[in-house]
Length: 127
Image (tube, rainbow, N blue to C red; front, side):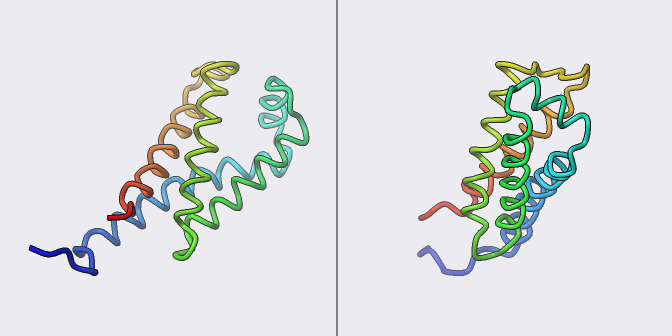
């Protein structure tokens, strides 16, 4: 059977789900950074890039969130999301620990956002 231009019906739904999950996680992560929440300030102080790194990363996360939900730019957002979350996972593994503050939720969200962004790229790979 020759390939067609229109994907099967569930593909757009799956595409939106795998785009919205990392977008939501990135938006939730960006807000404390941009509002100087004490936990975000403490985390970036440990990493050694407070305050400029926190503000820059928050701005990139917020931009990535927007890129992921806009139909024309979601692929660019997914690439940036993979890179951002690879950095977050690396920071947890090398400096912060998986259980930062006794809670693994930041690490888990980074892994989920990484996987979601990678799934967007896989789902929309060139044929």
